[in-house]
Amino acid sequence: MDELAGSLESVTRAGPGGIAVEIETPRSFDAQPGQFVKLTAAVDGKDVSSFYTISSPRVTETFEITVAVDPDGDLGPWLSEAIPGVSLRVTGPFGTAHYEGESRVVIACGGPGIGPAVAIAERTVADGGEAVVIYQDDDPLHIDRLDALEAGGASIRVLGTDEPLAPLLTERVTEDTDEQVFVYGFSDFVDDIEATLDDVSTGRELKVENFG
Ligand SMILES: Cc1cc2nc3c(=O)[nH]c(=O)nc-3n(C[C@H](O)[C@H](O)[C@H](O)COP(=O)(O)OP(=O)(O)OC[C@H]3O[C@@H](n4cnc5c(N)ncnc54)[C@H](O)[C@@H]3O)c2cc1C
Image (cartoon, rainbow, N blue to C red; front, side, top):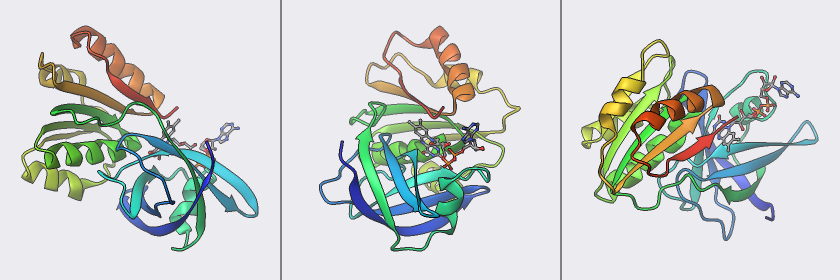
């Protein structure tokens, strides 16, 4: 897949240690919430790339990614200081764990997995569907968007890392064949959730994206 030329539109704070990065959409690029891209930038004269997942309900003139900034990382800290207009290169979209018009979505997410989760929930509600978001993080991001989703009728639960997520998830997963379960986050989180869902899922395909 070819690299597409884009540029940074804006960087805003999404919460403690997290940023929402708006990217000017490269020509001929389109993607669904939940798909991911490889983002490349010249950092101190060296090309640095990392994977990030689309966190805007639709790709329009711009699209958004949500980045949990790892202070020891290369691209995250650079993005948090970057100036609008700076060049970025986008490769993608990749991934099959994305929104496909499902009428009911149940999304379990941890850490920066909240990015695709709010995007898919916003899109589902905008398309007249039902959305359940169960989010585990001690320093949650996108609280404003979660509040707006809740006000719009979505079911939103934010848990600390010491609170059990499994009972809540098993309660919210139904037999509804139009329901799609999504899981987004780093490996430890995803492994735990997949183990939980093994017990409850009705054999339907889960849509899982593991951030490594
Ligand atoms: C499919 C996919 C989707 C993803 N989506 C998102 C997303 O939406 N949002 C998000 O925040 N993250 C996402 N990630 C995770 C993100 O790509 C990684 O966290 C990435 O490492 C961040 O890049 P960075 O340049 O900021 O940090 P990096 O420079 O990659 O460093 C990250 C950490 O790894 C350590 N590290 C780096 N190199 C080494 C090494 N050789 N040995 C040991 N430790 C090392 C660093 O010290 C640092 O602590 C996704 C990952 C995948 C695979």
